[in-house]
Image (cartoon, rainbow, N blue to C red; front, side):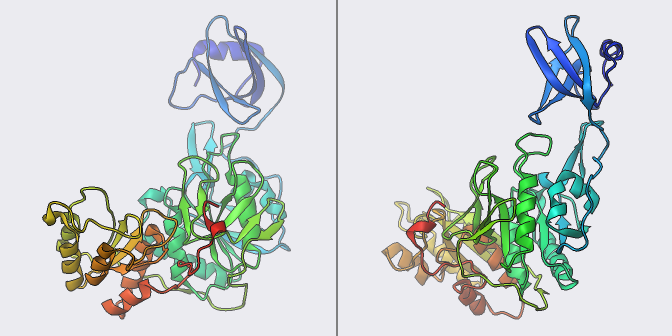
Length: 445
């Protein structure tokens, strides 16, 4: 609750949380919706939501004047949906895992609550009612994306296959953005015979901000989920403005900025499509699977004893040795340039070649990617690369480090595959993770 002096001033003005107010603090004047004070915070600070969508805190003193205006808003835990889903529209399912996009601020407590029903999602993104019939919202877990790993990926794959096989035309997976591209990569490998769209969608800005991007991302993702591209894709802002989204292949994406709304970019490829919130869609490539009638199979396996290891100047081969000692079954090396590791340093004991050789001899699959991201690795351009290849390392062409990590764990999860078969499949294009021909137009899209 606000302090007694604020409550007294509000009572005299005829204002209460939810009222539209004008607050004058000296020469500064603020107009907006009066919000309740959260459980935490300064009880002598008025909180007002401006028309921009942002909140402002105003220190209250004897000179502060509060005036009640016409209008206001209901401050319920969840706003009431003014629309209903149309059963005649295409039916899609939503798998909610947490993250900024599937939450709503409860201004009575200052806390964030998950949206757990189609009606609640509709209140947050009302335009969904004009695009799809959200037949179900299922939530196998609620957690920050940085806490997810293989068990969560497997659950998502099983649920997505179930929803698609039970009649949904597509699936929306709402997700935190920090490791969203790991999950999208995992789904691209785990969903076999995928014949319908799966859109992985998040938000970079919270729903209480005027720059909240989740509403438009959901609208574009809903259009993608009812379209004809039967692939796993990340569907989020394609520019910093509220104009269109990109549908980026799930295993060719990277989060390239910590806060920009267009943070997810395609690497070494073009997006599948550019999608506007009104449904207008521009296809940017043709090499995708189209919608079909088939049974989606959840090939949900993963070997957790896999590591992603980044090369840096002076990196000790003890890093590789440690993983071998700990019985890891796979190591993805994020090398420099074309896939280099320390090979002939002044201190020859710092060379990684003996450690990689030992790992391979002990049946650890060692895969090589590049921290350059764009371009591809190559085993034969330089002598040092040839030595790494001769030691038994597998060069993964233009596969992204994160994708190679997911792919290797997924392959090793198939116990029937031999180490040699896993090594061979790391070189093969299994789900669009390798682009055999890179072009100029695919750089910095």
